[in-house]
Image (cartoon, helix red, strand yellow):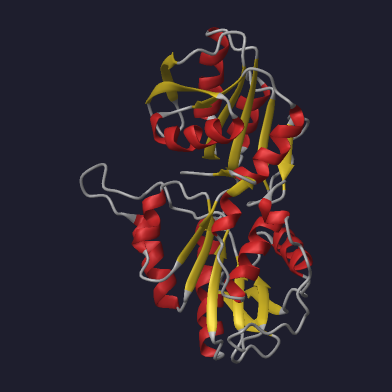
Amino acid sequence: MVSACARPGPVHPTAVSDFGRHLQLFSGSANRALAEKIASYIGVELGSAQVTPFPNGETFVKFNENIRGGDVFIIQPTCPPTNHHLMELFIMIDAARRASADRITAVIPFYGYARQDRKDQPRVPITAKLVANLLVASGANRVLTMDLHAQQIQGFFDIPVDHLYAAPVFYDYLRKKELKELVVVSPDVGGMKMAAAYSQVLGAGLAIVAKRRVSATEIENLYVVGDVKDRDVLMVDDMTETAGTLTTAAKTLKQAGARTIYAGVSHAILNEMALQRLKGSDVQELITTDSTPIRDTDGLPITILSVAPLLGEGIKRIHYGESVSSLFEVEKGKRLKM
């Protein structure tokens, strides 16, 4: 059983933590459907906030209820249009700070710019760090996020960061499929640690597809390290946008003798190129979450799992000053180690 769903008891709409703060949830425009699911899980109403554009494109924010002294959680993934949603989040945080909220937590199910976490070329920025600085400067006291592209991004913040994993949600779904002779595959070297964690909790084999990136949209795979012949394969990754890595890896795995190929991706930001690639690929099923809105997939075999209970439980525990570490357990005695 997924531990995030273990105690879904509602919080009273006027619930006050041990620190005397009222829990208040608000949503930007990026993924209101997820915010409503989180509010429903917790048992509170989603707060009323006006988030509208001016004619020139600037964003206007106004909280329509009193948040003075409140424990405010603002839910906003930074999915496309990334810059717009990011700026909207900054403005909402600033508005909450100026309205005398006692504590402001930015709930960012998908953290954009996470791939720009280092200087891998001359004269380029470390934008993941810049975004962290801007979140703190705008007035955030805490960040709750999920499946960062690189875990060291937590160190870019000088405020507490609670980093959750979608793996417990995937585990519950995959366990019901009863896949035999499963092998977990990382489609690149960077995802090896995530693949190893999934392999451990699922009791599966482990393999990797070595790749060389040709451009931002093109991948050239070289070879498979590990045995996938006549096995069910689960590729795991934190995100996909153009699906280049997934589809090229799937082709390589099929050539290596894989029986069926599934892809488990925490954040699916699928553009038109991704949809076309996945339709003609060897991926039998794409399993993802609702951390970002999923566009119309037009018949693509895709399963969307909700992370609302996971994030909702994280919010409740932060509010009441409880530990969130048990949310890393997929079932009793099995804990993720990433």
